[in-house]
Length: 182
Ligand SMILES: Cc1cc2nc3c(=O)[nH]c(=O)nc-3n(C[C@H](O)[C@H](O)[C@H](O)COP(=O)(O)O)c2cc1C
Image (cartoon, rainbow, N blue to C red; front, side, top):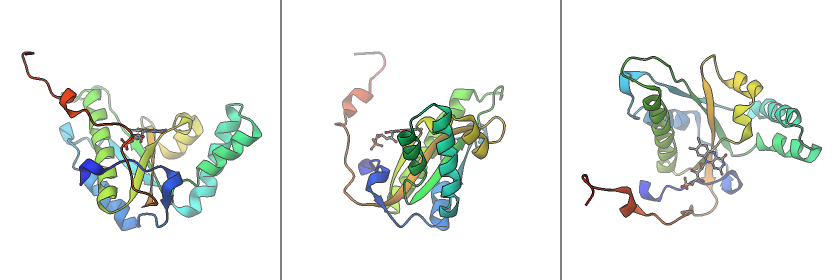
């Protein structure tokens, strides 16, 4: 079942969005990520429908700051309405934690995202992680993150309008070696 989880972009997602309970179930599964030291270096922020216009304005302001054309600003504004359901993944990586280097915390965040996407897939939703330029805009970051946090990615989710498909052929045999090399 999980071997056929593929990302579904916002163009191919229709309502309904996950309910509050379903988002919570997905976040619960994210907690199954391997988490050395139990640091919980991630959290999810749901953007409800009534907040989309405010997010849209932030996206537009970001595009203006980047010197984009009026057409591109309009596209940025529209992007905030992408996906029937929208969540942000926020990372909280701490330097100097004994025995838990930063790369292990990032691995935990990645695993949490994977479990979040897998949970949505198992509930019948299509979903996709999307970052794009908006996650690095200081104003947008401040709107979602506290000090020391990183706006990692958006996650769009909804009912898939077409069968999800692989983007490339799996090359599993190249993933596993034996030591020492034969
Ligand atoms: C943190 C993160 C951010 C991503 N941002 C983008 C993005 O902005 N645009 C994009 O096309 N894919 C992005 N991707 C990749 C897609 O989510 C997806 O994994 C990729 O298209 C491969 O599809 P698959 O999941 O079906 O294998 C991102 C992935 C991650 C983990």
